[in-house]
Image (cartoon, rainbow, N blue to C red; front, side, top):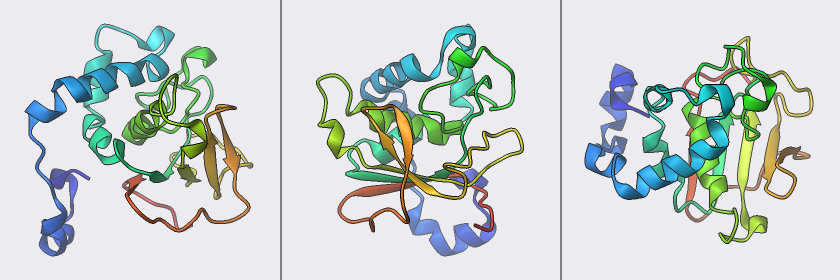
Length: 187
């Protein structure tokens, strides 16, 4: 995560893990093109206001692109947006059609979208999409789905849905990304 949000203990013991990414990279052509592509799936209808880019930047989402761009698999802990809730706060009402299909909340949802976008039209083989998600229930306004809550699921590019796994996902290997919530439940 961001160094400015890290605890003193994390800074003292994990300083080697913080990477300072320059704005030139985050605002550059590669990330900006991916940002605009993901926005086609995430910033829908009534949410596409004059200030939507500022709202997304407040999520620190652009840095997440660098985490998933070349990952063979992505392991996520997060929460799901309830239908009819906006993707910026997760709690403001919008038309249910304005909630993204890939319904992971916050900046983590953008990372998931960037990873999944790799398997779209003319991209990588959709069968190779290894997006694993643990639904940690999240804030009170998050989606509560008994099929996924407290469980691991895998995103299906073909059906555009979360498919619950019978247990844990495969153990990470190769180049993978672990992303998600900054506050976890006891699960």
